[in-house]
Image (tube, rainbow, N blue to C red):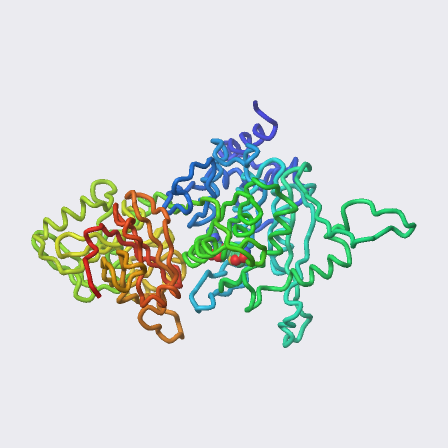
Length: 627
Ligand SMILES: C[S@@+](CC[C@H](N)C(=O)[O-])C[C@H]1O[C@@H](n2cnc3c(N)ncnc32)[C@H](O)[C@@H]1O
């Protein structure tokens, strides 16, 4: 059906070709005059239609599954590593094809809570001083960044869905206008003032009024929305002034003096002694999320947080029996969330008994980057790639193989992704490399490749005495490179390449150095004289450098080891997790039940910054030992 709106747009599209001026009310192609009397105008504002149609959907590639073994469920919660714009566009496809359904089968997400960067121009670090994310956008760039996500968010919502956007005074008034445009003013429900720092008295040094609150904008998709009013029960024996019994379930939580008292306590920022503290900067507290989730969703509903950070929304959604989807583009956030969900406690505030979460899957939201890669002149890409990993640019030949340089004593090859119209790095490639070099390469060979071009998950693959390590350049860095003006030519050095990675590559993995012994031990020393498969961690050295911090010693940066006892060659399935404090107590040993040594093991060693080192081991790799 052709609506007046469609006809007007077609008309506008035809005018430039006819050389005519636009009618005055249509001069601004952003405006949809029948809906908006006023709007926020700024440079670079895209049309909603264009955001919806031109945003590229990322492929959601499952990389790890948790608590799925032996379970047959119709829904798995989703944790997505990647830019939320492309990830949400993929989720929209899921919604359209019926894959994004609440437990009551209604399509779409019932509740969205987001806590985006606040345009503070700061870099945020965790308690280990590792960079978590950078809040670098400002001005119109920031507004448009958030607006594009809000446009997709609206379309992801179920018809009776709600959205809460957590901001501070810097930009909340602009975003309010933007949300009025996207959702309609009639769908604005409340501006919630979240009081922060009640006890800390922070910022008392400022020669100014003390800023002491955040703003949460609450909108709904339509006038028909879920709102579960929360009550504080009346005290026992409470009667009304005239002596009659009280009406209703209690004091509405939102507007009583009691509520004020509770708010006062609820709203304090995460304290150092708090059980829910993850060390992630800007972590919000679970009580706040519990109130929002309880009020605006029912058990079984999907809750989405597209700026998941430490995963507060996801943890609370899990505790309250909701389905959840979390997206974050930082490896530190994704690591923090995984650890948080693996050590979850039943009560809000992370107290009480342990809670085993429902199955969830970690996805990589990767863009097909071949067209971007094609834009990068080969020689410059090669030079950038070598410097990014601090390799020496010294081309040399081994057997029939042209290599590109060295890392320490190891040979380095920059994988040519442009070959044959877009080559992929698979095990066959490593076979061919090994064969063509006549087995004469060094013991450690490094292959640098775009992350999306590598078809397997492990970080090295062994052939004979040689280990072929894969150094992956993530999509975030490739995107940034593709936007540079390559025509002008660019001379890369290690400092420049690293600076570029620092600026955008929050998913850039600094492959830790790991050396282990793999042993089978029987009898003495083992509990009950049983046989155990033991991984003795001799070296674990993180390669992430933290500015201004003293380098950490051997094994000090190990966070955990995750194990899949029967790796299927595609997706890691978690069977066991061992945390560094326990491993340390056991003499830096990880003990696996011998029965676990039947198939291929995938071991993932994770450092405290979220960098992973993944290896595959076969039962035959474990050697009998009497030590
Ligand atoms: C303020 S923090 C969220 C904190 C979270 N509410 C909590 O309780 O821990 C914002 C998060 O958004 C993430 N982020 C920023 N831009 C993003 C993007 N374009 N896509 C996905 N995540 C993004 C950052 O990595 C950061 O973890």
